[in-house]
Length: 114
Length: 112
Image 1 (tube, each protein chain N blue to C red):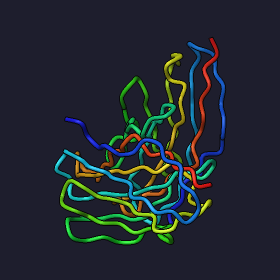
Image 2: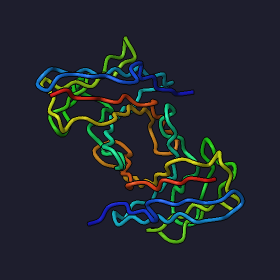
Image 3: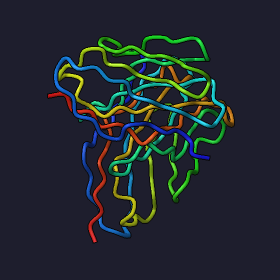
């Protein structure tokens, strides 16, 4: 049982390049999320998917797109990377456990945009 | 709108000493509260959570947290810190995953 997995672990892009971050979970969760983590700001929600086939914007969606490919996979795409998107990106999935919607996180992708 | 404040950016304690990390929240309804730990280069791991019932919650790795509604606080405690507890700790509030708010984190350093 791998939990939540993310690829790649590290990535360096030049301004204007595009890339897709991949995420998969094997916990049979309906909901999945993409966060970014910046120093001194905690985690901020970019996009989420409450179920297969649906996606919604979070707190900081500008410059990103997502695809919920199936129940297991949720990808995040940067169409034209900018230095402001340098961050650590976390994918999470959640399910109801003992009264709460509990999130489980992947190991993160550290992205640098030059 | 809900929010979380972790007043301490960085705390240093000696190994074997007790620990308390502070968390204050703002939430319109009955809060669902969480503490996560992040080791260097790792994702976030759930330590414990509160949603109702006993206001003193036990978690993994010997941690506990106490919900105090009158103070809007959910402080994390451990009686005796181990060197392996050095990490960053995040408090979060939210009823559903899509409205979770995380604090900025408290970095814990453990002195030998």
